[in-house]
Length: 428
Image 1 (cartoon, rainbow, N blue to C red):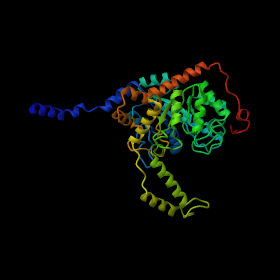
Image 2: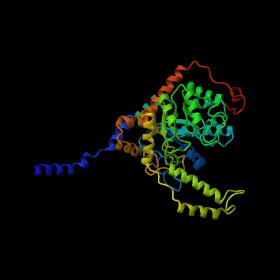
Image 3: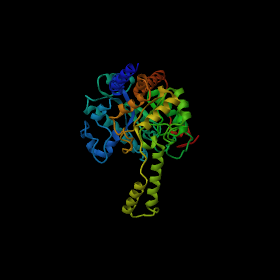
């Protein structure tokens, strides 16, 4: 008996290397069939801001991850990350005059199309779920466009329809600022959610087949949009408020509404939206910077920027930033899956939009397989991973297309903010 037990133990000791799960192979098999879809990447705006006019000719194939302020994206790393489809954000600053926002939005849409035209072996433009599957099957990255802020339509349905005609697949109802018809998560509320004009925007998005994106909006705006919409919504890059109570994240009651709506919350990687400890540290750092030097009237070292910078470095040395990790992002995925269901969670990295404030292990677009492998280690099945990677978003896109078809005879929205709200920026 002892001999048999010894032999069995010896056999077990020899087998772990062969029996260990091959997560990389599982991920590769899944992503060969199901396109991995990221809901939000700011690479076009990062190229515009950092490269200026060089954005039209910069080599985008590889090598953009070096330097003091590296890009999170280039083609080589997209391929390493097995990306099948990407919603490219065409973000412009919400602080600009509305007409400037429209002009710059058009320029960024043009840049996305230019990138696709320059690299036809790697990218192809997509509008529909069928487009995404076809382009992925061709071995290319399906490129979709998301307009990241309702201010970018300048309260004009005509501008919204022009974006749609140019290929935009979603509109984020607000960005960092509350606008005439919708409250932002990161600004003082004015409307208690959506105004009547804002509700009409949601309905027009449904009619057009564009996705309603509720990232960046206040919780009240989320609830209003979910009440009004006929199609499933997305949160293109938001995490779970129940894990990190940042106002940019999605509250539990809204997660339940997302389940009923059939939508999807695509988890954001930004450190402040992943870790409450990091968010609090970042807030403390901002307060210390203001305490040191806030021209023209505030600060202990006002008018002495060099001394203020040295003092801030000293504060940072004494108060190091909390470490944020890939595992913490997986925690958000699991929380949303628990609260809303595995049919209602996806990935929306926010790469190239968060100044490289990203978790360890998720520094660039090559790292998606590592996150999927982490969830496999936690017991996620291949079918679950396929849903997370892309099937959930494809389902939402397909349903939005069906809603648009059903609304094909509905009248075009033509009203103004003044007509629907009674005054510009009218509250409820």
